[in-house]
Image (cartoon, rainbow, N blue to C red; front, side):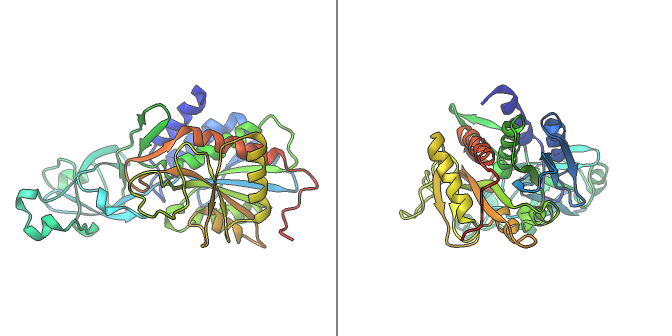
Length: 354
């Protein structure tokens, strides 16, 4: 990965974007992509749309959601401890003792999620790891409620402390890879298409609020009205001890992006993506699903009169924790695959299944 792209990726990962509060990261993406696009726009929902060849009759939409799971301030006790609700699917099993950042109007406020020390726990508490979000508190070192209110407000969003670790040569680790890596791939694919003569209009969208119901993809797809829509998201890697199902679809870090097949996916698009990967010798992994996918592809598919949808998955270990892990080579291969697919569309390409 070249330095500019890697710097962009790391900037994305260092920028907090709790679901429903994506403004900061959208400004970052907009400013970075201006030089590569014909225009960038933001809709009323907050989706950032980066466009090439906007006036073309046929349109392709790439969707990578920029929001991440997090928390929201709900209550501040008289003693100065902060109680929260969850934004998206928080894994309560990993939050105790975590470092967090409260994103207030005055700037970031660091804090830690506390719990009762093991010395004071009952035997039942020690033997049963069960966390109730209503009993979790954040400690910012304040002496009382009045002191907390000088820094934060009810309703301020919270994320895990944003930091990126490099593990070995090719792996990156941190909170919020789900799904800043998908947003990154969508933008990198557009950059690879920027100097090409395309037969379609290309719209790379940094979508919002995926973690609470694919909401941004619904509204963005309605507004763009694409013929083809491809979601780029993370998918569960099975190459670690957490996979206890020997019959699970094998997905490994470094094995390339996963190309989905199943009811959320248009068969023509899936076939073209697979054929493109084989032709250009781009590493990929097949990932069949018998159910509707839990990502933006499912929302895009049923926009207006229907869209030829597909999904590209970036293998990810430890999803929805503060130590998600991906391989940067999978990101590069995903962007190359999508760019080649888009460049391969011509006036005779027909995405109707029959």
